Image 1 (spheres, rainbow, N blue to C red):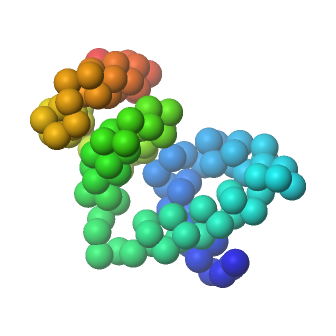
Image 2: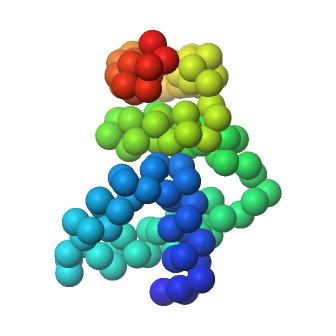
Length: 126
């Protein structure tokens, strides 16, 4: 593992998802899951999110679209919180969900709205 990418990724991951969340995940990693946590931090967050060509807000919007299309709602919830941290507005989240509805179907957009409402309420943005 590239230690520089890991360190860069750790910073990006904490900026988006929150230091408490990331530290909790890393602390919970054991011999079985630690290699994946380290590789994912280096690859996804160091290599991917560390590329400054796309700003964090745009990257968050892209992630919500892709993860919503995949229907991975646990990850969508985590990245919805991260999107708020990266400056994505409630209105932009709604517009992203509209696109998910158009290309992935109404049931998937309803799932995204359900999760977004929970995240927005927690953030005091309901």
